[in-house]
Amino acid sequence: MTDVAVIGASMTDFGQREEWVVELLSQAGMECLEDAGVEPHEIDHLYTSNMASGEFEGQTGIMNAVAHDLGALPAYTQRVDQTSSSGGAGIYAAWQSVASGASDMTLLVGGEKMTHRTTGEATDVIASITHPVEYKHGVTLPSFAGLTARLYLDKYDAPRESLARVAVKNHENGVDNPHAQFQKEITMETALESPIVADPLRLYDFCPITDGSAALMFCPVEVAEEYTDEYVRIAGVGGATDTHVVHERADPTTMGGVVESGEQAYEMSGYGPDDIDVAELHDMFTILEFLQSEGLGFFEEGHAWEAVEEGITERDGELPINTSGGLKSKGHPLGASGVAQGVEIYEQLMGEAGPRQVEADVGLCCNVGGFGNCVITTIVEASS
Amino acid sequence: MKGTRYADGSISYPGHPVGPDGSAPVDEVDLTEYTATVVTWTTSMSAPPGVREPNTLAIVEFDVDGEPVRALGQATTDEIEIGDEVRPVHVDELREPGAGIREPDSQEWDGYRFEPAE
Image (cartoon, rainbow over all chains, first blue to last red; front, side, top):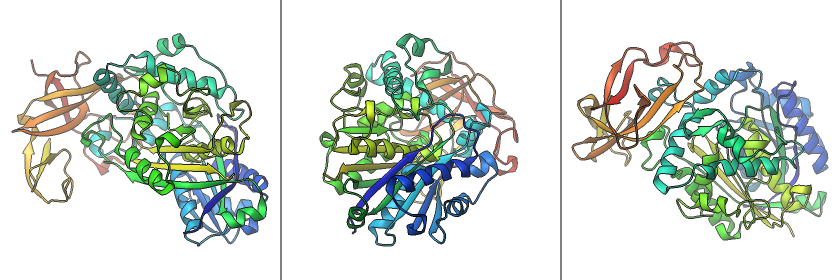
């Protein structure tokens, strides 16, 4: 199996953008080509991570459009849809393409255009992933979060404030991310007194609706050294699927896809939870940061809230989580989010994270689709 | 509200072509003949098109002769707590068909809400 490197990364500003999805994707793709020093005609494979351009915008076939706009013809191209984990699934597909020997240069671009829709419409597009017995009751992803948060707080006797602390931490990190949708700090009071969205969760427990795009360039390690002296290496990647019907899971506070994908990534990489220096987790809802950090073995079940209260996951803590600001502050353009997690880990391991920089040789991303329905975990290491 | 029993004795709601261990469906169970216990609940204040607002939802667990079966559905009240006993009550239309993105003819729209059993 070929050793896979990442030699370039980029992302657009996240937020409310005027551009439509293909233009957003092309912007990140062009910037990534420039960052990597790769010419468009050198691309063998081009993957486009996106959940719902047809539903949001009425634009399908976007992988073809992006390949044309980037001048990457006749590269093999494919759209990757795994709902909110489309970006992570794109990392998996890009890694496979290079590791298998099928491609010597793979560009991954992920993006979504959402903000032209009302909150209700966007919520419904995302909720359309649910089973008919869930959909007819008006179940949404935020309501899954409310159901799970109530159970977690009750089961582990965790204080409501611990969830607000996740929001405060990630907003603080987002201040130093020039691409983040929200670059402002919030207080505990702001989080705890914001409007209820899905009891016991409030507005600041949720990520915003976002437009944006991000990109990564993959190639074999021996090819990487022809382009640059510094790159990062994909040490491990794992993907797993949990039940479609969320209530059929034995324990709603355990995300089986996170556990399984994490175990796969740890096994492939040879690293364990104690080896991870920095992590980007899918904090679409604050409660998800708890569930993932427990499922990945950073903390024991029912104890993630204590780690947050103790400051362990802050930027200057023992295990910084979501130095980018996370989905919570940076924003969540569905198909872009998993790729943008990879961009943050790339920048951290390359020493390019500016004021967000932490000391890190090994980083982890965990990208969650649905409410843990599909999960991709990726472990990345510095080349030197 | 039909649960599906599989050859290994497990029951799921909704049913699937195979059970958790790959065994085949062998029987149906009418869950409306049972009461259930609230596992957790929430009240959603930001509902998508065609959904009542606020929308209180609960995950409940039925005990079908010792076999646990979970379901998620709307509740008739937000005056519920974890551990409360509830029973299913039929509603002709849980959500306005066609108001949201899903094709109205692709699924049924009637179903059961959960109300306190007391």
